[in-house]
Structure formats: structure tokens, C-alpha cells
Length: 300
Ligand SMILES: Nc1nc2c(ncn2[C@@H]2O[C@H](COP(=O)(O)OP(=O)(O)O)[C@@H](O)[C@H]2O)c(=O)[nH]1
Ligand SMILES: [Mg+2]
Image (cartoon, protein in one colour):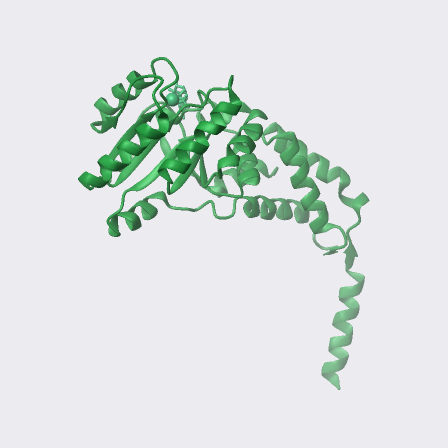
């Protein structure tokens, strides 16, 4: 008897201290949050989509009056961002270890637009892998860009790993195939496939990517995006996602610490970000931390 009265009282208090969120309530705040995202280099289309998702999740929800709308919304935004970045904790080294335990090389194909940092990132990874006791071989499958093979050779020499190459103009898929055979024959742990990413012949480029993927059947197709590319990174991720991006690396974050491109890439690919590139040195490759990005994107 006493208990049921208490229950009634509690639900009455709840009913007067709750307010249903309407679209009008949050429009201004949402806009403000979207601006913050855009100022941090999240693309317009992605911040709009995120805003829509937030609105859908929030309108009609009950929020207690004791909780300020702004705080509530900020929490919701942080949750939405974490949600987009979900799965961003993939550990590449665990993956490689598993393959090694099964006696197979991990085959990693690096894809992305020209100049985003594929070759540099491959050199960094070869260096880090070596430090961790894994052997690797690099396939010089950018047979298109002048100087690309020499650039790779210089890196490989400094880091102390082999590259498998043919001449310029030769079939990138064939070069990658050779590198995989080489790795299998010698028990090498990781094959790093460098590719070209030229813009001027986009159609051929995708056909080339598809062929590399068909011939080599890589374990991971790793998209390399440039933090400085702004909105262009969205188009690039969409384009390269035609071959199915498994995970991504965001480079040049040292030049632009805002990092919002990571959110755009995650949103489009629905796959994790593995690393961020933070400079031109071989150890300038850090594991991606979702909390780092949430802190930057949610206004205080
Ligand atoms: N500051 C900075 N520069 C980078 C980073 N990654 C790559 N670069 C530079 O970006 C340029 C293009 O890199 P490259 O690896 O040749 O790109 P690719 O065409 O995709 O192979 C080079 O000058 C690299 O030194 C990074 O994380 N930070
Ligand atoms: Mg390159």
C-alpha cells in the first residue's frame, strides 16, 4: 500500500520533469554542432548526414529538465561519433600474427589517390613491422608514376626490406602476384602492395585496382586518405570503395591536426581507421584513437 503510493508519486514527479524534444528545440544547436564538425574538416555531406541521424535519434525522446539540452545533445553527438567510428579498434598486428600462426603471409593492398601517402605509409609499416620482428616484402605495383619504383627502392634500402619490381608500364597485378609467390616461398610474414592512384584516367584506375584485387585476393584493402584533402577525401573513399575498403589510414595529420576526415572516411566505408600518419619519419605512424577525435569534434 505504502509502496504503490511511492511508485505513483515517483512516476508523477517523472512526468512533470520530462520534456519531449521537438525538432524546433534542437535545430539551432544541431546547426552549431554541424558547423563545429565542418570547421574540423568533416565534409559537408557527412556532417549533414550525421546531423540528420542525430535528429532522428533525438526528436521525440524524453529529456529530463534537470539535464540541460546542450549537455544532452553533446552527449548524443559524442555517442553518434563513436558509433560511426565503431570498430575503429582493429589491431593490424594481431591480424598479421594470426596469419603467421597459420603459416600464411598477410597480403595488404594499399589503395588511394595520387600523393595521399601510400608509398610513405608502406615504408613506415615495413619499418614498424621489422621492429616488431615481422618480415615483409613490398610489391612495386605503381608501375605508372615516373620515379615511383626508385622512391620505393630508396625506402626499402633504408628500412632493409626487399622489393619485388618489374619495369615501368608492366602489369601491376603481375608484380603483386610475384611478390606474393616470393613471400610464400620464403615464409615472409607480410606482403605490402603499393599501387598507383592517378586521377586523369579514373576509369582505367578502377579497372586496374579491380584486377589487382582479383589476381592477388588481398586480405586487406587499405585505403590511404590525406587529412589535407578536405571534402575530396569523401569522393575518393566512395570511389575506391568500389573495390571494397577493409580499413583506412589517414595521413598528414601532423599538418592538420583537426582530423575530421577520419570521421568522413569511417562514415562512408563503415570500416575502421587503423593508423594516422603524423610526419615523414619512419615511426611517424600512430594507432588511431577514436577518443582523440571525439575530443576534437565535440564542442566544449
Ligand atoms: N607531413 C606528412 N607528410 C606525409 C605523410 N605521409 C606522406 N607524406 C608526404 O606526402 C607526399 C606524398 O607521399 P607518397 O607516399 O609519395 O604518396 P603516394 O602517391 O600515395 O604514394 C610525400 O612528400 C610524403 O613525404 C604524413 O603523415 N605527414
Ligand atoms: Mg606512391
